[in-house]
Length: 320
Ligand code: SF4
Image 1 (tube, helix red, strand yellow):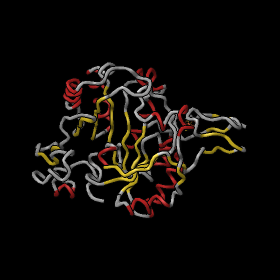
Image 2 (cartoon, rainbow, N blue to C red):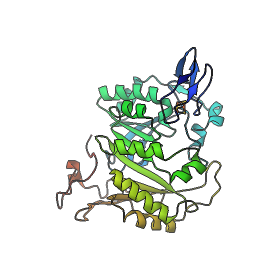
Image 3 (cartoon, protein in one colour):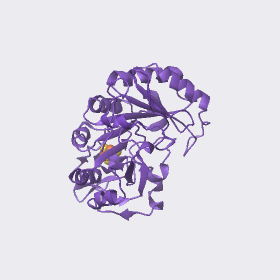
Image 4 (cartoon, rainbow, N blue to C red):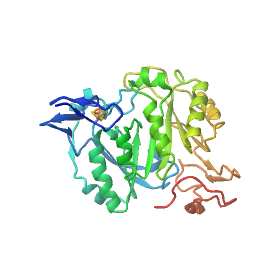
């Protein structure tokens, strides 16, 4: 009998022995299973800013982990070694029981655990087991995802994840040509999640050759209308199968200028030497001077989530 996986928008229907588009989920002995459950291909401690999350527990560390796999096939994938099907056999896996993760996070003084590097949607059952253990241990949970949720996944994940960074890669044509994917489920997911209570930040990797300034303008309008508060525009560099030249700092600056005209109050550059500071959107007081220089510029009163100058609320969670 064919069984349908509901971990992402593809909703693959699988016969016995067949694998989904992600090559991670398969039907085995009459049930759907996640291959290599709990076998991690990455486990590391990162600054939370690296996710990137700039308004969620800033200046803290997060225990970051990944199993193998992804449900898209972006030609420019920055982590293709641990996401794309052809590479899976090259990896050394390390089995980690879900209940061990919160203990490790506490030992490493991380107030959060991040599901990241590959696409956590395709190993969602392990993610959920770890996230539930983190909740019991009063640790925050972070999911860095391409956002191609199924409706079922959205319902399952919403209560378990405290902060999302969601990729919005381009328009529908970009998803079709470059990712074998679709923008529609991503916007649907954002529509649900940006309403809260989870914290949401969005990242777009800007390709000078593919994203026109008009594209950026349209994306800014769409994201602003959905209630997105934080948008990271990061510089593209050639990786994997994509040989388009890197995005210049000058073009990223132009894209940022366009993005700043949207209704999104916090816009940041990524993979760039351009400024990483946060200003109050109301009175423009500089609140966080430079994230590259740890401690320098971090305004303590932000712990209360308000601008110390004018009292305006600053989007985010600033205390563990
Ligand atoms: S996770 Fe997505 S791509 Fe993988 S089998 Fe399930 S529905 Fe298909």
